[in-house]
Image (cartoon, rainbow, N blue to C red; front, top):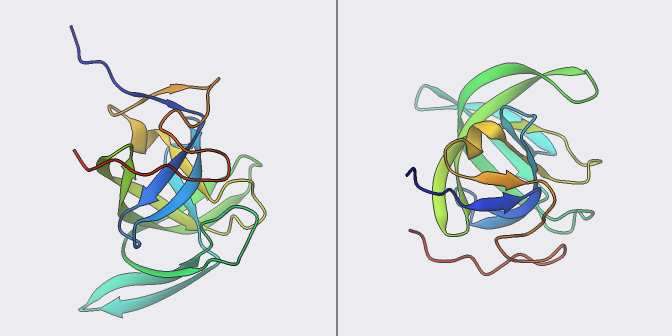
Amino acid sequence: MPPTLPIIGWREWVNLVSFDNTPVKAKVDTGAKTSALHAYYVEAFERDGERWVRFGIHPLQDTTALARTCEAKVKDQRTVRDSGGHTELRYVIETELQLNGHRFVAEVTLTDRENMRFRMLLGRGALRHLYLVDSSKSFLLGGTKFNPPAFLPVE
C-alpha cells in the first residue's frame, strides 16, 4: 500500500521559514501551477554576480500594519497568466515553507496581491506528492480565519 498523504483544506496557514518564520494565510489553489506571494514592491539587485530581489510583504490579510522586508535569489522570470486572463512578467524565487511542521522548498512568484483576499496562493507544484486537498474544509492543520496555529516541530 502507498503511504497516505496528509489532507489539507482549501485555505491553510503557511509558515514562510525563509522570511523570519512569518505566518501567512494561503489559499490552496490546485488550478495554479506555481505558488504566488504578495509583494508590494520588488527591487532587483546584484549580489556576488547573481540576480537577487528585495521585496516587501504584508503577510496579514486586510491590513498593511505588519510589513516585512525580504531578500531572495532570483531563480527565473516568467510570464504568468492570472485567473482573469491578464499576463504579467514575474520574478520567481525558491523559498522554504512549512505546513504542519513539515518543511519543503517551493517555487514562488512575486506579485502585488494587495487587493486580493489572500496574500498567498499555494499552487499544485508545491503540494505535489506532499498533500491531498479537501476543497470542502478549511484550516485542517490548525488555526482559525484570524489566528495562525502554533506550528509543530519540524519533522
